[in-house]
Amino acid sequence: NKINLKFEYCDVAEGEVSLPPITLRQKDLKEEYSVQIAKTATLYFNYSTHKSTPDEVMTKMKDAANEAFTEVVADLNDQYKQFCDASNFPHEELPWEPRVMSFNELYDAVKAEMGDELDTKIEEIKEELLKDKSLDERDFSMKVVEEVHKLWSDKDPVVVVYYSPPYYPHIYVEGSEHKEKILLESVDEAVDAVESDYKIVSKKFYPYISDLSFVSAPKDPKIMEALKSNMPALDSKYKLPLDAMQKLGLPVVNIGPFGKDAHKFTERLEKKYSFEVAPKLVKHTIENLLSK
Image: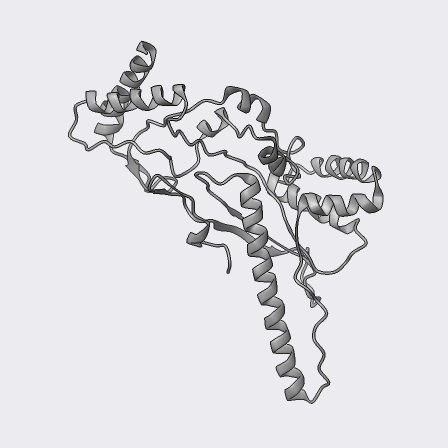
């Protein structure tokens, strides 16, 4: 397991650490039971960031996939040799070579064979998949990748790395821009002004997901191209107003309630802080911003 819960893929920024990748689903793609060995499989996981960009994450994931592929081939060769030796069968190295590519690289390889016909074909594939309302954005993405791969003449084993929705851009309020400084000052002043029995601290990152992510997006064209060209569901099954998010480009602060066991049946609020202290923090922060 090269990725799941591995600390090496955590982002560390200003002493705060993002959560490691967590596997959400792993399965083969056989549609029914049979004794035939599965031809294809899929795996997807959450990947949280504090500072890594989509192009950097893609590089990390391709490297991890290549390491895993290399180890699997080496282990298969070792097991196969032991089997042949024990069975007195002639042994030859297995023919497979580790190979990993992004969806965009797969697209380029297939387009080199099909030309502009590929773009027409992909649109037809997406239109057909959109008719199936039971498909969520993850399954839609996977099926687009699967269908594009089927169009390729090269049938040797390959791992294709791509992005599935949703995409929550991290917002790192460093304080390097004027509006960031004003926001950070306003929050700090609000924390100092509100009297309570709680030790309130401000941190640079909310370590989970929040819709506040949608008021900004990376502006570097290279970064955005790495995302767009490797997210098959974008602008079809998955709508995300990236241009509008880039134009907004807002620093944000998340001042919310305090509780425990989020998303569990035991989820609960600490009422005094949530209903008495947090509203005051919001009020003071807004007033501070308006006064600057």
